[in-house]
View 1: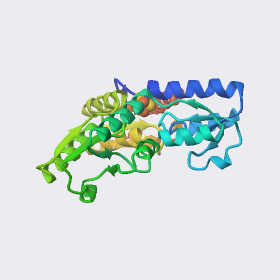
View 2: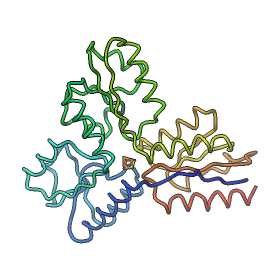
View 3: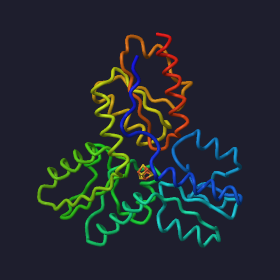
View 4: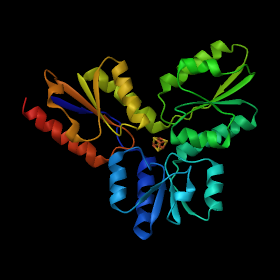
Length: 282
Ligand code: SF4
């Protein structure tokens, strides 16, 4: 059995920087991460072992440390002000590409567009975006277009980890439903997400089975899995090597491996090692 790695996979610079900054702060002082630093339970477990506390942006009263960390997913400016007013010392690990999405949204709102975000309403990044502009409409599926009122100017951005194809499809449908309206789209999907999606498409052409490594609540990991399945390739999502099941690889010539942007390098290495063992036993 051949094992083929995607040409782009695994941890992005935004997550690496957030982790490094958090570890730096945690070495010096007691600190609370607001929300999940990155969507990876192994990272959470490591941080817990180091004594890093877990808190929430929505309930500052429970925070027991003076230092807090805003995750790579970002936060609204309103939330930042609340943290400041509470006398907390903030280390902000917001990814610069999430900041770009905030800037794009601000531009659209100040230019008079009705703001629409394509993304998951319950995701920390989207909640941070909506936090400053409660008038934002959040859509993810075609049926969500039903909630969009008549308007002459729509301004659209996307959650950074949405697949381009979904975003373009929804924008096209929006344009058809509101043929007389102006629809301005600022592409805020991040480059690492696009690269991993494109690399996965190429991998699907060569592989019988795809293994996607990443947290079950990681949006970009879920999107990689969904993309492989949409292309008709059998695909499994795992968080660690122990979850690999040798029965998945019967009659498989080539297995493709990719990983979400919050997956640790060591996790990917152990999965490849385990796949090599499975291959040697076939
Ligand atoms: S997935 Fe994209 S937006 Fe999110 S942290 Fe990585 S580079 Fe930044």
